[in-house]
Structure formats: structure tokens, C-alpha cells
Image 1 (cartoon, one colour):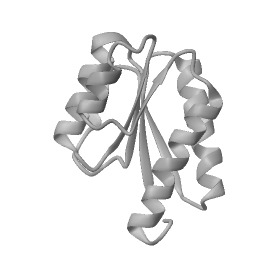
Image 2 (tube, one colour):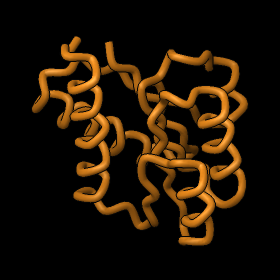
Image 3 (cartoon, one colour):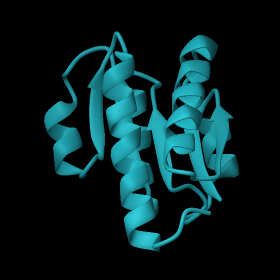
Image 4 (cartoon, helix red, strand yellow):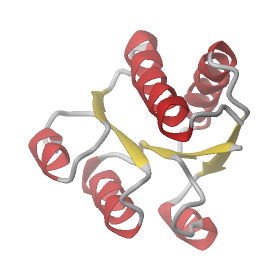
Length: 130
């Protein structure tokens, strides 16, 4: 099972992320489960290293970046996609090896491409698609 953490307070955005992830997973025949976290506190209550193959973090501003950085530190194998309103944290994101940094407004094609890279990596590294 490919578990993805969707971390954002905006319910509409979280729904779009989950929908796009499920659509992309179907293309690769990957069984995916999205876990939504409205706050970073809820994420850390449900977090354990290795649980999530990917996390899409969209809390915004420093809160989002700090959450993404902590994810990278505590689970280096988890792909982290950071969404933000500006490119202010892009260089810092590069330094912590984010999988992708996307600036809002969220463009569906950019998110699809980022999720596609994560799924391709998962299929290639595991050799299976469960």
C-alpha cells in the first residue's frame, strides 16, 4: 500500500490533491491511500518513519517549510512536495532535498507531474506496485 500524507488546512485543496493522486495511481496500477491532516499537530500524532511514501505539505509560510524540513529529517525516504504562496522557501527547499516545490495557485498539471515522479520512483525502487 502506497500511503500519502496530504497536509493542508484548505479542504478544497486537499480534495484536489487526493483526487489527482488517485488518478495518477490508477495509471501506474498502484494501490494508494491518502491520509489528510488539517494541522501539523495532527500529522505528528499520526506520523511514524516509514509510514508515508510521500507527503504533500501545504500549510504555507514558515509553518509549511518547517513541517517539510522535519519530515525530511525524521524520514529521509519520504518524498516531500511543498506547496507555498511564494517562492520564498524554494532555495531552502532545495537544500533539504524536497521532491518538488510548487507555488500557488496550484496548477493541476504541475501537481500531476510531481505525483507521477513519486509514483514512478516507487514502482522502480520496489519492483512492484502494491
